[in-house]
Length: 468
Image (cartoon, rainbow, N blue to C red):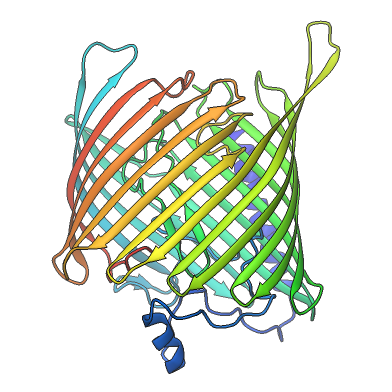
């Protein structure tokens, strides 16, 4: 099955290439990603970005970020903003560049069910982020690869499989109709991604990226393919229709090790003002689970309101209802159906201050993440970053996750605090402490606590802006 989905992913990428080659040569080049800076940017735009109380410039409904609609930008593995393009690193050969490299010395203390006392581990880790990023005509293809070399209690381990790949192709079919083909692929050879716990937000697009903080063994694979249609109904309204297919695969040590979800999302967005958007959304997905869990059909109806009050403050809120209808055969091979309904929704806030940033997100809905389940989950994430001085930065974060109406009812919590000290424009020292607690995770996630402490040196061309 693992090789079958890898083949499907490469087939999707090949189909994207065929479509992009068949697009008209006179199509305009893709606009620069949101948040990118150009040398000829208008002076007024630069002054507006520096003033935290200024009102964002006016946008058309074609370019507005409609809540629930498909994003065309590709995110870096360590951020929520768009992946930078052009000349990014001094170590770059064409579209291939070394984004970062770091060395960490890690200490862990683990208490878990099934073991006697506390298990202490010492880890020395070297890792790099290598990026291949290529744009042509109206398409973009990027692969982010993170190999690791670790020495765990004196034993050398290599992890050369962690990668993320994204493909975006956009086609202007008519003056009012746009089609986009997007494919996003992620593979972790080991699910324990220890650092980078904090919620990340990008003010330009309002997008948020949350970590998977539950620790478990084995691999995790996710692939999502979308065919997004955007139709302009008028100067203020837009209709987005997005068929999609999503695939998850987890370690064989988990009882439910894969799921397949074909579905469609329909979003109607209305631009109340240049900074206010309201959207109505309907999503349907039919999810097949590999073992034990019945096939489940999910339907979600929701309303979203999003507003960017100033160039430094963005918030969004969503409320709706999701129904889950399960179909399964009993011992007499008679099909039965059960339906459950629950309120779902989300709320997010991204705020930039003069020398700090605050990001918050609440989510309630059907979210697979690293743990494949047919249930629902509540999740809260809060992160705060502050530039203590010209060279020192502090990062704080916490989060809570709780499943309900599921087979395992897994829950977990984390809290972390980190300091970064810039030695030069590219070199910095990094220190982090994190605490995790998780329980009732079935065969994959044990109940227990983790204390994590790391210190190391990082090389990254250019300092990452606060809140990026």
